Image 1: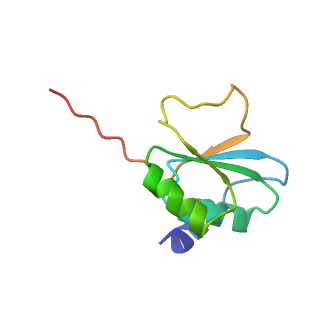
Image 2: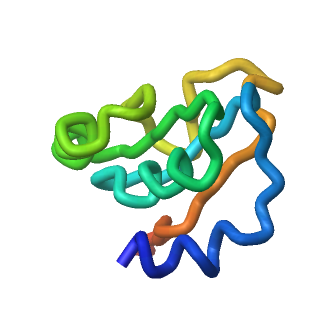
Length: 96
């Protein structure tokens, strides 16, 4: 699915080698891999809240620095990234 969607989702990005990119809610890393394929030379960090997904991502796509974190509390300084990509994030709110 990521390979198919990448053509549509990433075609208008203007990433250059050396830029720092955050893939937010990276899941198992399928779109993370597409980012590197489309834009070689970027410095890519991938964040997800699920450790199991990050383990699979690291195993199957060892092309980024994978970090476990909640997207609302990222462990990076301001202005760390030139670009943030997020294509699969679903926000679930439970109200009681």
